[in-house]
Image (cartoon, rainbow, N blue to C red; front, side, top):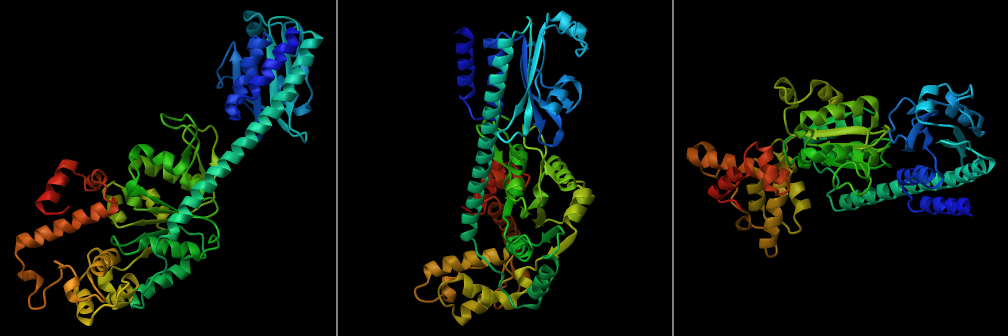
Length: 485
């Protein structure tokens, strides 16, 4: 009756969780606590090497998982023989049994009996091995109990692994849906008939069908993300996800988790497993926006992934293979950053297999009427259009869109010159830029830098200060001095 009750308690404890690690811990703790084992251990077939057993749970005399028997080749030692032959192995006098060679350890810990049992799935595949060491001889009823527990443990392990797989796929689908929903609200397509934009599109058509990494360079606001999407959609990976990572917006402490994911409990706040951006982009394209903002430590980890084609989740125990095409973008001069030691040269050459330069709007002013018509829901007067074409647009297409959005709100039926804001860096009709006082030109230049930083940081002043390598207080002071909200 006591043995039956113990088996029932163990079976109940196995069902308390569907997390694989928790299930295995419950199994070994139950064997030690309820069946009086001196030590209980579970090895599972290693995910990265089907010819090796990996120690995943241990209780009793030792809870370490990194000792001399942490990895056992199938067919080697007693544990490996149980796995290879898929048959139980037991002994009621290990000191006299020649199959057990570590006599000193057995004698020092008073070990007398041993029983090991293969863990098999529903279709007979090998899952692992369950083993116990006891300070007494094991009777027939003990071996029968262990056989029952091994069968129950096999079911519990199989269910936990299936649950973990379902959870992983569910999180991946949820994340992919979030990216797809965000993509639906983003402008699509590259507009322009100018020679400059047509040259860039010709480069896209050449590189898109290949597997080469692409480095897109250009000023802020030129539409580098649209070019990244064009590369993806013109490639054989078009049906797979295009996942964007804003490297400038990632806090240094979360970069690794964001890119590679993390396991539950890997750090404070990791309440559940998280799928990283590389896994989300598996089979597709990963777009690393503003890659030049990555700190050197993160650059080293990114380089390793690009070389090995596998990632390690934070807190994970095994590498995960990934098949991802990299498209990176930056508005910085990465070659200069390499010379200055701010960017790794080996990573730069990995990313810049095919450099693609997006022209600024001032070099494609012929496209302004087309872009303005697409960005503004109201017709634009000829005078207003001429004013737009005369401006150099340091913020490029993004600045043009913002100006026209504001003008459309102010305009009644059509956008007139009076509806447009004063574009301070554009030369007035009867003067030249050099006629402006020096202080005004300096302030205009500083204002454009601050606007660009805030735009890249999505309005986050702390992040904008980090990009400008200054303090938040200094940034707020300059914003107030220049009359910027």
